[in-house]
Amino acid sequence: MDAILVINAGSSSIKFSAFSVASHKLEPIASGKLEEIYENPHFVVKRHNGEVIADKHWPSGEKLGHDKAIAFLLDWLRSHGEGSTLLAVGHRIVHGGEAYVAPVRVDAHVIEQLEALIPLAPLHQPHNIAAIKAIAAQNADLPQIACFDTAFHSSQLPVVTQYALPPDITQQGVRRYGFHGLSYEYIARVLPDYDHKAATGRTVALHLGNGASMTAMLNGKSVASTMGFTAVEGIPMGTRSGSLDPGVVLWMLDEAKMDSRAIADLLYKRSGLLGVSGIASDMRTLLDSDAASAREAVELFCYRISRELGSLAAALGGLDAIVFTAGIGENAPPVRARVCELSRWLGVRIDADANRSNGPRISGPDSSIDVWVIPTNEELMIAQHTLDRLER
Ligand code: ADP
Image (cartoon, rainbow, N blue to C red; front, side):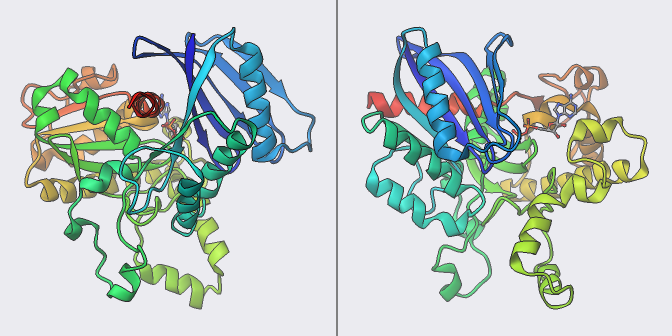
C-alpha cells in the first residue's frame, strides 16, 4: 500500500495524518499528535474509526524537541506501517509570502526562501521548517511538499491587501496576506456538492476554531479575509485578541512599559475568549459556564463576527451564502444562532432544529441568505495537493 503523511508542526506539538493512496484516491488511515515536545511529551494515534492504537507518555521533565519528535514519529510509522510505502510528506506551512501561491516541492532553495519569511510569521514558520529539515536529514530522498495557508488568498486584489502605509514599509512585505487558506480551499472545493449558488455566488466562510477568521469568496475564489499581515488580525480567537487600534500597542509600549515579547505574549496567548472570560479559551467550557464573564466573552466573539460579516458582504457587493466551519463553527449551535440573529438585517433567518442538529443547511425557507455548516478537512487538502504535486 502507498501512503502519504501530512504534518502540521507547531511550537510545542506535531500533528499528523496518514492517508492511503490507491488509483489516485486518498483514504484516511490514522491520525495523531505528539504534544508538549519540549516538556512532558505525549503521543497519541487513532485509527480513522476512532480506535486508539498508541498512547505513550515520556517521563516527566523529559524533552524531545522537533528533531527527536520527528525521528520518533517516522520510526513509529515505519514499524506500524504494515509494509506500506511512504510516497511523500505534505506540510502545512503558515506563510508562502509573495512568491509561493501554490504548493511546492521542497529543496534547499525553497527552504532558504521559507526561512527568509520567518520574520513575517515568527510564531509558526520556524517550527514548520524545523519539521521539514528533520525529515530531510533522515530521508534525503523522500519528497516533501509545502502547502501554504496564505496561498488561497493570492487572488485578492491589491486594494484589498494594501495597508495605508508608505512604500518604504509596504515594499518590505508588510501587507495583508490572509490565513486558514487550506481550510477555505477545501470548503470551496466541496461547496458544489452542497449548493450551486453557494459555490458560484457571493459566500462568506467562517473558520471558527482556536484560531478564527472569515473569508469572502466569489465563485470559490478569495476576495477578502479578516486576517491580514499576521494571524492575529480580525475577529477575537481562543487566546488571540483579533484587531486592535494600533494605538493600543503604542500605549502598551509607552505607558504600560511592556516590551515586544510581553505584548506578543498578551496578544497571542492571553487575550481573546480566554482574556475576556478569565476562564477558558475553549468555547465548550464557556458555553457550559454560568459566569457573567463567560457570557460576555461569547457575546463579544459573536458581535465582532457579525460586524465583520457586514464588512465582507460589502467587499462582495452583497451576500448569497454563509458557511460555518472548524471546531466552533461545526459544533456550537448557540454561537451560530447568535451570529445569525445579529445578521437579521442582511435577511438571515435560521431554522432552530436544523441548527441544533448541525445542518448541513441551517437557514429557514424564509431566509434570503443560505446558511450552511460544512466540516473542514485541511489534512485531506494537504494530502490532495501532495499527491497532485507528485503526479505532475
Ligand atoms: P484548531 O484551530 O486548534 O484546529 P478546532 O477547529 O478543533 O481548533 O476548534 C477548537 C474549538 O472548537 C474550541 O474552542 C472548542 O471548544 C470548540 N468546540 C469543539 N466542539 C465543540 C462543541 N461541541 N461545542 C462548542 N464548541 C466546540
